[in-house]
Image 1 (cartoon, one colour):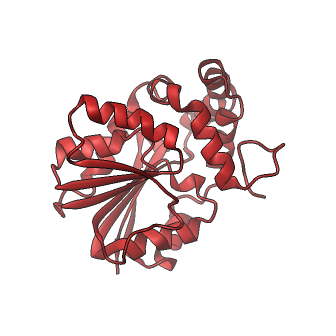
Image 2 (cartoon, one colour):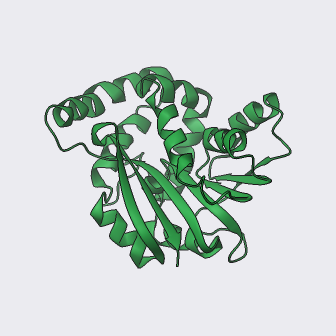
Length: 242
């Protein structure tokens, strides 16, 4: 069964994900910091470390949201160009404000688009990053294949996604926080109750660890690796285009 934010609506997952992020866009950064207790900043830095060795000149940040990863790439790696892509233009508008304040408009371009139908030629990008985005794809394999298509041969993709801790007591604490505390906090701050009920449900149903690595291999990647972060609360998947 497909997990969607608004179960009562007869619209596609893609449409619902776009609506959800439009709804929470003004509070998204605040919610990230509060709900993760700030550790999401460290996770994004770890994500970017996976593409450092290749010294990418042109980077695509898929599901860029408010451009946190794109901004950190600009600061840390100083590539010539970063394109941040997202379904939600309201999220992108929040990102554009930050980019303007930081005077990074000459490096970062934010565009509205669909990660499952990328409007870029084959073999375009030196690296691709995705932070907490693939879980929201309507068709996971199609999205992964599209990103593989626009990567240059041998170039790296790095994907940051939530995972499920397996060891006591983190597993139990995580489950209680994710299912009982986080939805209430998210609703209180964002006023969208569905968004932070959808989050734990989507994590629960997402393929993780070896299962996700097999999907990466199936969609054209090699050297697929998984790095567990913070007791297994999140994971980074890295791979190269064959």
